[in-house]
Amino acid sequence: MAEAAGHCGPGDSRHRKKSRRLAESRGAVTAEFAVTLPAVLLMLAMLLAGAAAGVTQLRLEEGARAGARALARGDDSAAVERIVRTLSGASASAAVATEGEWLSVTVTDRVGGPLGASIPWTLTARASTRSETAIASSHARLAAGVGPSAG
Image 1 (cartoon, rainbow, N blue to C red):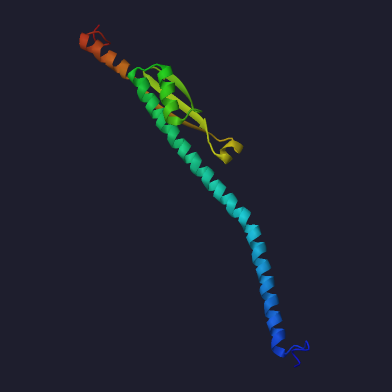
Image 2: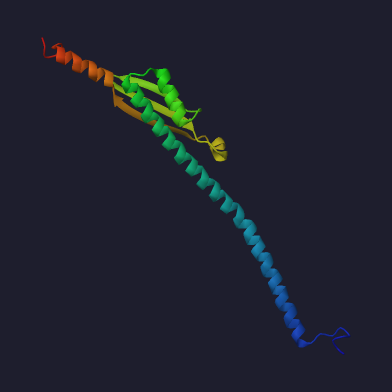
């Protein structure tokens, strides 16, 4: 009857203390989660941006190699630019340089993705090769007896 009148026994106060501790610990877990969630999301965003940069670099290197091969075969700069844009992406740009019989193609592009737009990452890849047309013409001159040792 004492319980019906609103009196609590000794077991009820222990139950209230335990439920109060559980409520406080639930609040602490919620606060810890609210603090760590932005840090975890930032780490995930940085990981994805790094992966996007890696993929972009691989595409640029492949485009530079293919452009250098095309240039060595004797293709013109416009054809090299088309090959580079096909392999590296429409926003990539290619620069062709010639030094003697050596040809090089340098490809640059920015990293895509949400963080790539906010962080100005510009990646570059370069490939060099000897001109196959210069080698073929020098072999033809040597075979014909015209060359440095012919005179």
